[in-house]
Image (cartoon, rainbow, N blue to C red; front, side):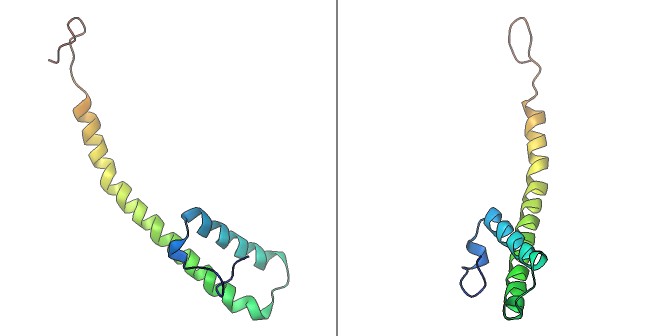
Length: 90
């Protein structure tokens, strides 16, 4: 398990890696007596991971919110009236 002392910057992790590390920290706290020496270190790392994951989700939501209307317009523009007999666009 990585701790903040030996783990790389959160921003260099993939979303899946950051999420898995956060899950491992949660499991550490749920699964046993917590080592007081590691408590603050792991909580700080968990906060870093959570903040980075939240930032990325917000960024993706913003991108989706911007792209979805453009995709809809493109899909509507692609709907053409084609003559079934000649294949010509009307």
